[in-house]
Length: 153
Image 1 (tube, rainbow, N blue to C red):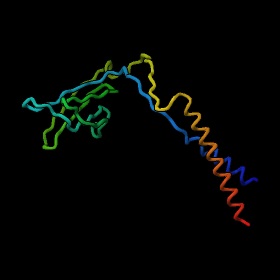
Image 2: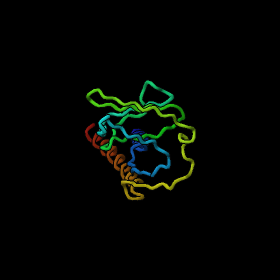
Image 3: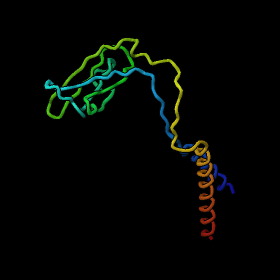
Image 4: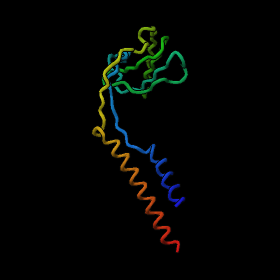
């Protein structure tokens, strides 16, 4: 009996972090910096590698990504100072933009915004899933114990 209680307690303890979760989004009020990159011919630098370097660390990129079809790239600076954005293509062309960001632009907008949840699960479903998972684990452990005790003789 002690063994069963121990196994069930262990199962419940392990069950706690194994719950389902949804996802969500909200529109940010933070101010982004958007740049457009192009060749000297006027052609847009579409889908090119972009790296952003913060004033805090000029060696390692704070953000990486690609320009869009129009050669645009956006980022949100989180500290004042000189930011560098480097866009390069596979042929060795490179453009480096240096921007001085003021305190005003880097400060996160303190205004509260309404959070819009886009959960992938209907409301209340997460609790039900957790409960079913816990019951399932307990049932399976009990069945294993019963099976093992039947084969021990």
